[in-house]
Amino acid sequence: MLNTFFSRFLPKEPKFFPLLQKVATVMLEVSDLILECVQTKDHLSAIESFKRIKDKEHEADLLSNQIFDALNQTFITPFDREDINHLASRMDDVIDTINSCAKRIALYNPKQIPTAAADLARNLKTSAEYLYKAIEELDVLRNNKKNIKNYCIELHNLENKADEIYESFVADLFAQETDAIEIIKTKEILYELEKATDTVEHVGKIIKTIIVKYA
Image 1 (cartoon, rainbow, N blue to C red):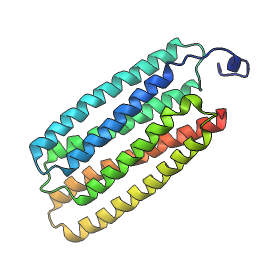
Image 2: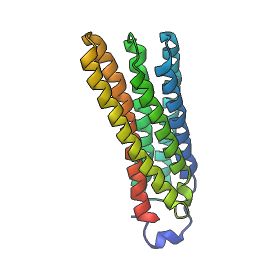
Image 3: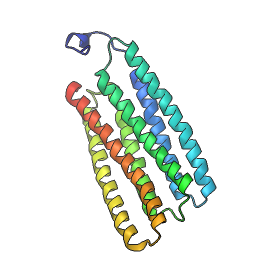
Image 4: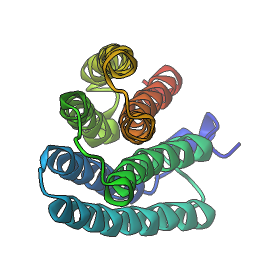
């Protein structure tokens, strides 16, 4: 392992922090876009939101590739290579899942997007904001350890809230909706939103591991 006791005294490449922050920025942007997408009443507008999210998803893929290439070319990294790679990959997973949700809205054209979708999207947007703050402060981890821990706690709380919203939605859906096709459509759309929040919390768990190792 390169990040040994002695490697801590060697200069470390700072380029990973700006790259991770760029991925977090894209994640924040797509969380705004998916909220717009689930709130629109016009299917053409939803399709347009999906296209914009898809463009952002491509941007995140390019950034993830840059991080992977940088890991292969850098001798000393600020954290374990695996942790940096997991952070970038999991944030990219969040963006992919949001893209998957928007794609389902564009393809399925549900008769109505339930209000629970907007509740989940707002919850997801808040999660993305807390994760962005955590990533933004990683380069000064030892000074901001308490703040970052608190952000991770909020991510856990928001994931629990997403579970509650989704479970309540599913119960109401099967109780009230009689069209089996619409049940499948809306359930899949909201599942992707709930899954995205789960993935954000998983990124928080990776950050907590980094805190244990380095703070």
